[in-house]
Image 1 (cartoon, rainbow, N blue to C red):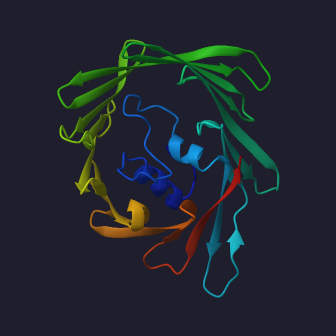
Image 2: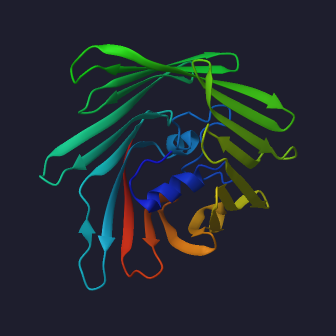
Image 3: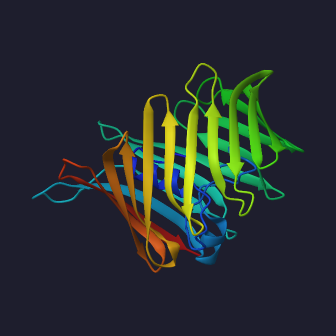
Length: 286
């Protein structure tokens, strides 16, 4: 879900990746039936506002200095139904050379069918197939840039339902590589707790807390670390601020700014630092 190297944008997706009862929210979590889906945007919102392309760029403002625009950007392309068609990361190396990495998404009968990843080190293709409660991903990679493709691995996720629990088990061959368990409130269907277990790693546990149907904080525990994300809303249930604390210590605050209801910028501040990080969003419309 992370689409940027900045902490502010990371919080943006981690928190907005929650199923919110905010009809105008621009970014959302992937469908619960497929935790490995690519969708990070609210299709209906993108379609309603006729957004064709969204560009994300980061700047830094230090006291007494002009704003410095970081080189590179992220670009997201959408079809007229609001679905993400392509994401492109444009990076600028220290020597001034530009490097592009892109992922294109292709859908069949409303489901993700194929991903094509283009990058300097060699391209990849991920094929998706579905059979009942199973979702298989076959990953093919080039042996070398411009070379032939060969299958590297096949991942299968199986969904099981037990009462108000949804359990996703991810297999690489016959080996379970990840188990995700989601617990939902039976009265409103909102996720309340999630655990994620990888072999030989800490169990990660996330807990969602709601008030009047809106998520007000998310707590993530992994080992001895506890991260809490507290959310403040404005009018129309739109997120205005998220504060991220680790083991009780405030790490960062991200404020959200909108223009005509569309996310325009994020402003990230860190205790003890006068430097501000600004993430700007610009759009092209159909």
